[in-house]
Image (cartoon, rainbow, N blue to C red; front, side):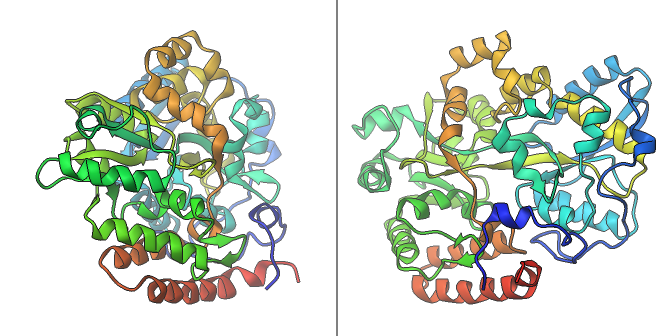
Length: 444
């Protein structure tokens, strides 16, 4: 198979009409068509206030519903002719994608919808999301103000199919009380070898039923955060479009991981932040979006740090997309709303409430954000770690069903199944999906 990078693939032309399914938004939702971007007739300079009803589908990332309602009220104050209906579209990104996919098959489409790092691409590929570039010019939205790496995560062909919203990286959280009891330095581990050494000490001081580290299980984004460990060992889920699950370094990384699991160093659950916040573990690797909840719930002092290793932190989180199948007038109003709730002031409000990263460059110049980061070093960690992040492996975020398949395999490894056997099976599975649904779209 030809080897093309993610950047090359996303820059291809003429492939967006091909049907493809993604994990948790399986199917193609053929009920909605439309141009990739709004037409010129609706895009003549339209910088006035938004009007009409705007329906916003969200899973309220980082338990942000109250914050979203606050931002909606601020938007309505500046746009008195507009009404915004906030719809509970699911408890996570996958459920939002499922609801959107159902609407594409013949239901009522929203005006704006939360799309995650593993769901946006399917909809863009099938022309079910509108490119925002022309609409942005029409309403004089300066997209250069978005953090480049975050905005370009939504680049496909010659357009962008979402704007950054609840963007995150994993962070390393640690309980300073248990850290002190274990006799550890007041910092995060340098690498996974040091984390393994510390884990034995942390397990000894953890409460009954606890462990050294809290991690999500395979159904709740373990596949996302574990890229950090796999990358440190020189392994990968994939290199460009070539799966690397069977590679020796990937096997070595996951064997190391399984060894720590067998020692009882990890506490796996659907909500690692809840376990850590309850004081059951000495540390945890969770999203920056968990910071608000942990800060509210933890009854002990804690700090955040970079992930173990150097330059091995994946980005993640979600953006806001606009359905291609709505009218051009609705698209314009939709981007006015999306622009407002992701502007500098709004992203300051949102990130301070949730722990997500500011998505606008200008947000870091806001006095409210400067003083907040100075007073809240746990929030500053994510901003400082951002330059050290790397794009996620294609096998997780662009291959149909990739993340879910990897998560299932990791659960099998935790359960004690042979690492090489599990990874060889995953290798064949993902190779088959790529051969059937990706390779035909690559240039010969």
